Amino acid sequence: MSPAVADLEIPADPQALAETVGAAMYAVDLATQSLGMQIVEIAPGYARLTMPVRSDMLNGHQTCHGGFMFALADSTFAFACNSRNVSTVASGCTIDFLAPGFAGDVLTAVAQERSLAGRTGVYDVTITNQDGRQLALFRGRSYRIKGQIVGTPAAP
Image 1: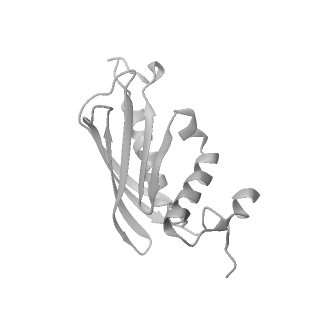
Image 2: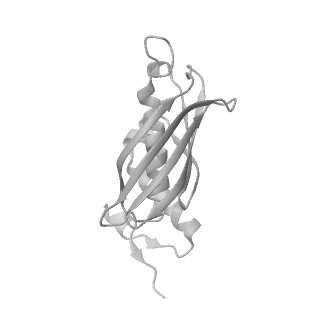
Image 3: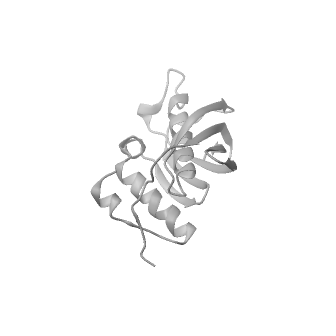
């Protein structure tokens, strides 16, 4: 954790906490940034990110390479499962591709927590294009580890 992030006060409000955590994670997530992903919305156990499909993301069929759609789903999953400021990693995931994405499309991934018990959680991520067409379904399993994303608890 960088010193600037460690020094951030932890908001008491769950929504404010999710937003603070999302901003802190995004600031150091060069993979997510380099793919042009943007956080549109974040809440406890929830995240919505977008990603434009660039020409350098196309495969030999001139459709969006599945690895880029997977990366969008995985990043969205990460923001959702870390939104409560408990360091959380993936323990496994699956993805089903339903339809192709094309150059110029803007993909939206929505991650929703389905279960959170103890150290484990289950999250579903749906990827759609700008027309609302479903392109992929992703299910991620999370595991909470030691630590937190942002800082020191606010003084009472």
